[in-house]
Image (cartoon, rainbow, N blue to C red; front, side, top):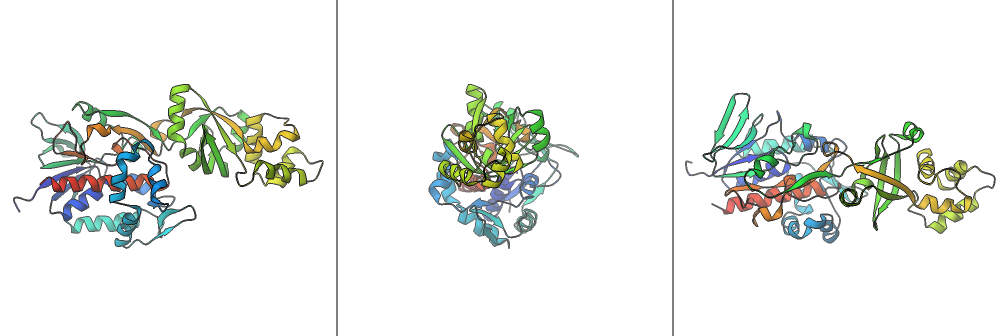
Length: 400
């Protein structure tokens, strides 16, 4: 059909591919461009430990996970909810289940079967995918320009959707190079910053050598009144893991504003301080501190030595319970952006209209992680990528 509208979707991650699916169903001729040799590389990497699609918690706490962006993301996340994402995955032949923490996974626990089924559907809908096509901006005449192994290419679609991701895991495709291209167009941007990242700690050499790579299971980590429960990991550079990632946004900003910060780690959050005191008192007299913490509280060697690392050696017995419930660890810096799971910052909300079209560039929309929002791991990242992709696609479809 000569009057069939054409769209260029730039970026073949979840936001771009989901928008492509919707627009193809709406009768658009869709071409997806990606600079990598294959699509969905970050999506596949995210699924290596079990693809966490979304989360099953109630709507109010779910939306609160998006922090400062909750007010504008809420309508998008309600228009494409966790239940909608689950139904979509199951429609591709990938049944899901809810884990003990409320996280939702495909039963296959991998991203690859879902992505294969999805690409088959897109092909059936007529979506064309062009890999090794790196977007280089606009020509003076307003055409999109791409570099490819065959040479430079220009195209003039009726609409463009940018879904280029943030700048974490750049080797998988999202390197943030688009920030320069959009800044040149007058698009307001918030600097890209690491999110869901580890933090640096100046461990003692002995502790670092002995315990790097050891987990801290089922702990509670607090900072300025915020508490995150879950697992953490001792790294040679410092701390990482889910309980750390949940605090990463506020902690990153606190370090930027005020310098190094102190976290408090509760090694037995299932027990009150009084409960810890009772267990220590009931243990046999004459035990060393190490034996006492191991037998009475079932702490691992890594956890026991973390107590010493935070409080110093020679803790008096009467201080031991308080020490276990609040181990102070000084963190000095967030890990670099290219080591983060995701990124904060990107296209400022005020740079977009209600349908996520750039105010500075007509007929150009944006979606996914390149928008200025952040969320913890747990399914919230993918949920927002899908939801913003669909929201933009619906606005694009309504524009014709």
